[in-house]
Length: 124
Image (cartoon, rainbow, N blue to C red):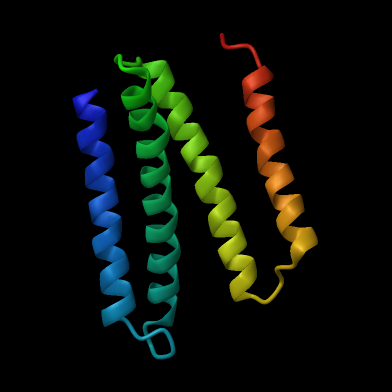
């Protein structure tokens, strides 16, 4: 559990630092625009991923009161990835002025159905 917590926190801190440097040091309209947009997207995705993994796994451990296993951590990582993918998809569509209510609902439905497929599948 401690190894998972430390590694997740390291990823979250690194992504926060990269996001800070991207916002305050890189020029998105100049020569650095490709690096700025790439680092903004990557740090946003991985930062949200680690943040939601912390919430889903370690929040569940705090609420349940006992240690969860590695399988629960893998499930929390998957759920964190799906939520961060949904968030980054919505942010990207909003940046491109393509986001409306139908698109947001369809994306949420798509990611919800992906999680449902994982929940109903058999683990081998």
